[in-house]
Picture 1 (cartoon, rainbow, N blue to C red):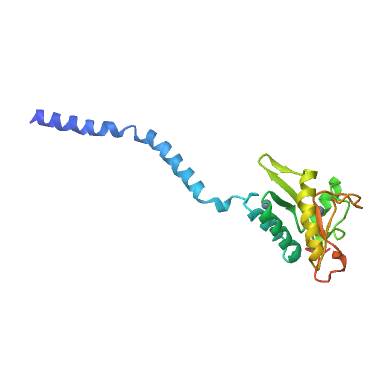
Picture 2 (cartoon, protein in one colour):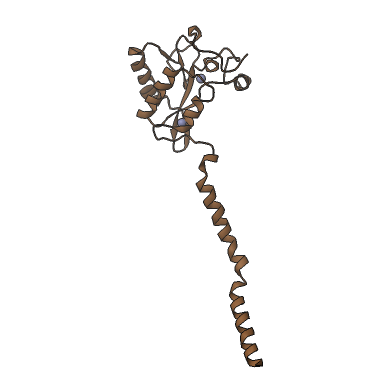
Length: 191
Ligand SMILES: [Zn+2]
Ligand SMILES: [Zn+2]
């Protein structure tokens, strides 16, 4: 009887022993679970510019303020479909950002004086594997050619500030020509 009890006890402890290190081995499993969860919720991460010909981040920038000039937006997405490396860093621009740019010296305009404040301008860049680039040759070969082709046939014209001899030289900046006289364009935020 005592022998049987001993056997039973030893069996009990044997069966328990392998389960003892369980808390330690369950740690990596927990980590793996967290990682999997993070991978399945990419929507919570901010969108990134992607060279896929229809960049989500560029779309978000256009939609920052409602009512961006539809012609300029369409022209840009046509350009991006043909040149997926083309992106925008800015479209409509609100009061706080405009004044911040003025202070930094990256814009000469106060809020209400820039075509960006009226949803009528974009700033283009080229996305390379190393990040944003502004190669003059690329702007001439891609952006200028697309603007010239557009302006030859379209009813509204696009003005590029990278054009040699521009009054306000600014390589990335493209705006709706005559935006000040377009009654459909309004300030993105009140003055
Ligand atoms: Zn983009
Ligand atoms: Zn600009």
